[in-house]
Image (cartoon, rainbow, N blue to C red):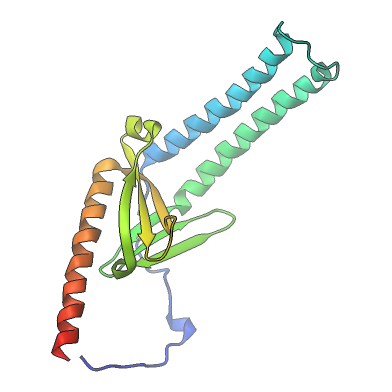
Length: 184
């Protein structure tokens, strides 16, 4: 294989033609449920704190109580709308030599990790993810203590298949790289 180093023009470079796979719709449903329960929990907490008998709340608490409840409801409603609008912007792609993840409605992020540079890969499942049959794939690159990026909201079997594919693919390319270096 001959070495080349041709000039590439920025107009010719694009990630727009990568077919991104969507995350599981169960992930959106799980996030919506979590934020709904969280905002309702805060509303209930504010009310319960106002009417408990163990200690007396400050005088201004009852004046602020309606505003605190409205704030908790507004936070839940905003998160509900944000999650619905942001979900279609999240996606991943596995290509022959790299792994991509994109997300973000306001602040958009696109991460590309070469498979050969992946140090290790983990599957993480919290209790809510296990109940929904979902998992997150954590990708670690060499030299980092924390994960480089995570792909959340994958069906568990898909996460296992992706992890296996990346680990097998990484080994194959390392073998190819070593054999091409010994041939030179």
